[in-house]
Length: 158
Image (cartoon, rainbow, N blue to C red; front, top):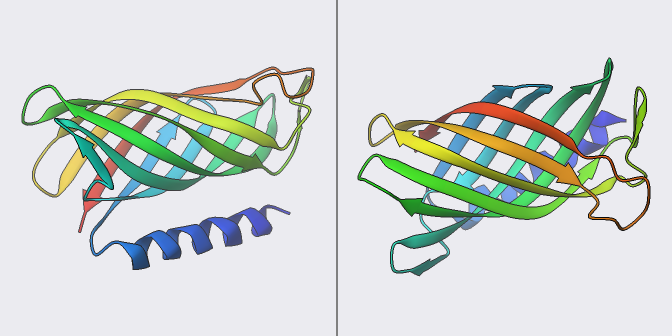
């Protein structure tokens, strides 16, 4: 079943890649997760120093001994603190491959995906970020236990 989510994610990544001449690819690991993401290198909207970038991704979750998959699309807000350090945050939509995780039941495959983190640009091309990731259905249906992760992501822009 996770093949469907991989296909959806690949389609979203290709759509973003064709819409933007430059992208940032991220690969991450974290508590319960492994992920890959792509975002535009140039913002789609800017207000002063605050910029918004579209991001799509695919996450493999391992919770309570069970593995599931998530495809997401999230507008990500970036704000620079210094030339190399910044903060990011985003909230968007996601679809999970399952609703049961061992002793957890998330009720719905649709989940809101949000994150907040700190980024550090190692160079013009490479960066690293640490982010807290949270997914829940926002009370659309009960029960609504969230799944959470702290991730470290390496990024490369081209």
